[in-house]
Length: 604
Ligand code: DGT
Ligand code: CA
Ligand code: CA
Ligand code: ZN
Image (cartoon, rainbow, N blue to C red; front, side, top):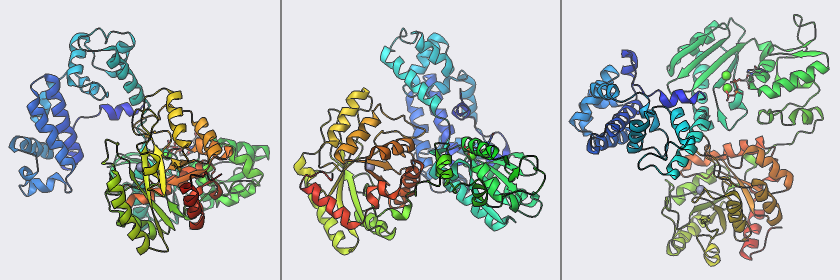
């Protein structure tokens, strides 16, 4: 199993007193959840398990550390925390473990808890599997399912076994990498701390985060310093958010933050800054190709600089800046998002790199939600924030009615909401506020609303939120059907993937691209950091095929409007120029588009 398995399995509470003093609410909650799971596994009766689970949930919602409640004697004031759970929490905070927990651990066959991690395996199933087959690891479970042994057990159907196999595969693919917004948040605080305290001339994020890759392994920070680098590394290791220093060398320190995020810091001399920034930004594949280009010119490129072969100990031809190094190789400077060895090196040699879309090119956000359905903020708050962000327009696209997870809009509520939006639209001029909808494409391909209801909106995006396990051709036809309706402006998060959580549904993306280019129905690049959907490689194919794109935040709160940035980064990784993105066009073009839609005319 890949390395994420460690995080799946390491559920034991902290051992040392020092860690115990710092046991976070999340870790306490996790121990309480484990207690609940183990009670269930033991078949002790579910009532007590429910108590622990409810307490864990309440603890996750707290704003203050549990230590504060303990110190003020207020633990039992927390919802769902009674005297017995409170005693367990005190024990956990004081010692890092609890007797109740240890007793249960001693009684539970090792590994059995891990089986509960597999979606589709509840306590009853886990117990049946263990009692009959003595299975305690995910690998054994997989083997048993493959060999048809699971299906022979009482109460386990072939379908359950199939589902378990799929779940295991997904668990395995989950690589335990960070989503970009989480990594960026950690990187931001690390950089702010270093900028204030470390004696470094320059500091920059490198690695996959600088390339704005879909997910981030570790964060790489590069520092330039004239002085011996020791001082910078000392300051870094003393960063209060550092949980553990994993490695410490002359020019490299690796730590794990309390968030679980691993961070590498490297120091270089200012004369090597550019060469080092290229090297540590990667990608590795880009570096390999770049070194190859250097070699064909009789040059050697490494993290210290660019040298004539055989003169590596002499002065570098270039190295202080990235522009110098790429320039000395007779190449254009390459934006980090393109450094994946996907043709950018040849394009830079020919000085024909695309001028990539930038965040300020975006004139409006066409996929946002308010508290009229599942958003957290009001229409007014969302619209005002969108205006503040410098857009010319925004569409509020709350959910259609049948969507189980959100309280969708009835026709009456659509009209009521439209009245609010019209007032906002007048108040915020010249900024424009459009009434929009994210309409659900049902399992049979029908939309939640008839055309006459769709006409109550200026902007409609369609998406899949249910029946995601259909065969590829069925799913593709289902989405293409929506695209052929001229009242549908765009398809949102076209593949439904959730990074690190759920695979894309089966769909022929190239067919969606073809139909998009044919009909003018746009394909969305969703900026939600868990989605980034379309993926970068699909963005590139869409552009090549002439399919129109929109980049949207899918914000469910005002702060999430800034997720547009991630959508833009993802589009840049797909080589998108502003011209390829419809919502870089100014208000006039947007109004003309709305007018054509109202007449059910396709934009092209
Ligand atoms: P990650 O951390 O998995 O999200 O991906 P990266 O790209 O940040 O990879 P990381 O942290 O292992 O290394 C940072 C950069 O350092 C990487 O993008 C390129 C460079 N690098 C690391 N190892 C090698 C290597 O063996 N050869 C070359 N050419 N470059 C390397
Ligand atoms: Ca990295
Ligand atoms: Ca690294
Ligand atoms: Zn949405």
